[in-house]
Image 1 (cartoon, rainbow, N blue to C red):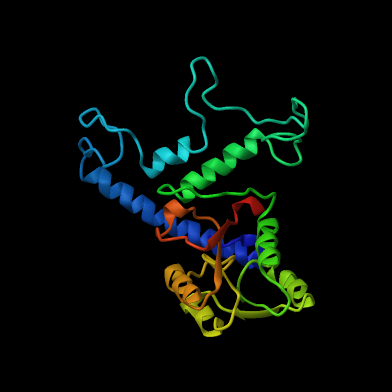
Image 2 (cartoon, helix red, strand yellow):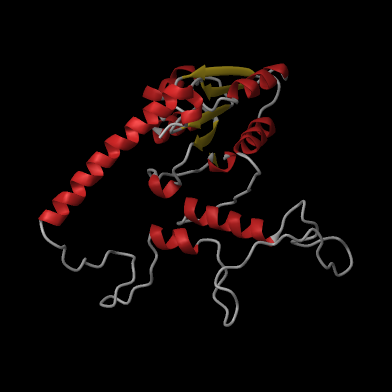
Length: 253
């Protein structure tokens, strides 16, 4: 669903209409299930624990509630609480995993571990948490681009991208734009140093073929960064993330 604030009063009306339409479909599905009788016992699904299979739960649903949590320890909390400490006990030099709360703390570590496990369940992934989506965007763009480089951005992306564009151009970086839909960014990709994909776009929720765009960019020697408005990897098509950065937009809110 698009952000209603982006379209003023008309945006709220559009979102309400979408919700009402979805509710009609949901109600129809529930009625059909009720009238057809109560479903019988569900068959065990691969990867989930079931008394007849004794398998360990490893599906996306289990990952969603277990990702980032430490191994169970007797008499310890099942869910570690947030760490608010600014200072940590240091045995001498100020080095080690946790030295000062401004840099990192155990809560951030668990969050990053959870995101990495959800985004890349089949192979290790390095995750860095930012205070906002725009912080993540600027970190990627300004760390990877130099004067004379070209970058491809969506022209229908998040509303602060134009401000980022003006700052990039101030550093002598060429900024090209194209719509998200129909993989239009392919048309302006030649010679670019980095391709920035936003799918679904915000607020229009247009989508593109990430694999197709990424393969085309990599074939041209370009880096690829992927931003999305809401769905995690588990709700998206699984594909190889080699040489690719991702920036889920949820933290913006």
